[in-house]
Image (cartoon, rainbow, N blue to C red; front, side, top):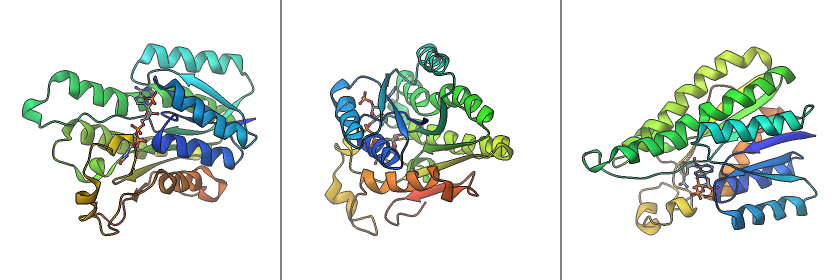
Length: 242
Ligand code: NAP
């Protein structure tokens, strides 16, 4: 069985990505942090497509927990190939820097940037052995352009973009591609506190994007059709300048 591991797969963009990859025939390893109800809903949708979905509940910002769950899973599935890794889990905690407590800085860096390191380090070993892999990192317009009130989040996402480019060079010769997808405003729980109507006025396409629109690009990058694309950042933002 060929597996796709999606972090933050319970809701929003991650859930749409899990379903897209299941439609492409992958068995899904769905990571999430705490929302059992939403994780089970996505699992049921995947199983309804006739594909297996295993829930891997762990906090991607916790290195011990992440390492324990992933290494135990790999030890228990000796022949399993994780062909696709989507580093999607993320949080934002916006604040102007002068008001930002250290905790807010570190939790956003840990969940968005350090998690990339904790997970990729383990999964890349599995891909190197298989001499094949697709890694897709979900970053943000905030990381390509910078956004006021998001120094922590912009720094974390820009960090993942740098890591995407570096890792792509490290493992290209083993047939493993590493790319990033940078959404603008996408309608999910993460953006439900924003004024969608007002912000849409500034978006050339005059609307927020959908999780499906992000998942379709991730599906392409995860496919054999994207075999010569690596180290790239693809923006999905309705025309906002990056
Ligand atoms: P969301 O609706 O808030 O969902 C976040 C997902 O990440 C949930 O599945 C959540 O699990 C999981 N998660 C959060 N922290 C985690 C942790 N420490 N360990 C494991 N799982 C964790 O977010 P979204 O809008 O779909 O965003 C997905 C990705 O796209 C993020 O990386 C985000 O930064 C990026 N992005 C989003 C937008 C946007 O406009 N929505 C724009 C640009 C980039 P639980 O359900 O268990 O809480």
